[in-house]
Length: 203
Image (spheres, rainbow, N blue to C red):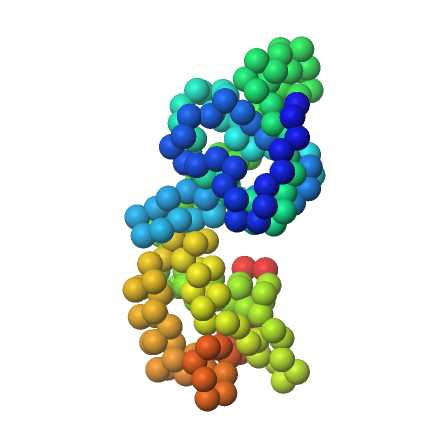
């Protein structure tokens, strides 16, 4: 195994590339992203030490099905194909762990894709905005959350695969209906009510 280090934002591997390595996380955070019609969606965030990713390319020898991007300074251990096969053959517990994790990932990915198909774009945007506000927003003393408009737009586009055009139209509608409001006189930040966050956030 070889240790590799990546800076925040650095690409570990790209969707569509041929892969000859899998990775085990030592520290940091990695987003697994898949391209969709209008952007990308985050399928999973790898954040626990000893969690692995990129193994499918060693199992089926097909191009990468997703991209892996370091979202913080990240350190991983890389394992090549021959070493991976040797571990599978010689270590039954390791092989069983691989099977269980792959099964769980398939179920989670299928559920995620079903939700993307069945949920309307407007509801996905509202759920995304509420979730972002809850996790990353500034919780004000009087209850609501303050978020950067630029950052929440970027996050929803990259995590939910919503186009900026569709997203901006929904935000305009929410502003018109006073579901959200601008913070102060500028248009750089939004105020999202605590009630809205409680109703829509997937906590």
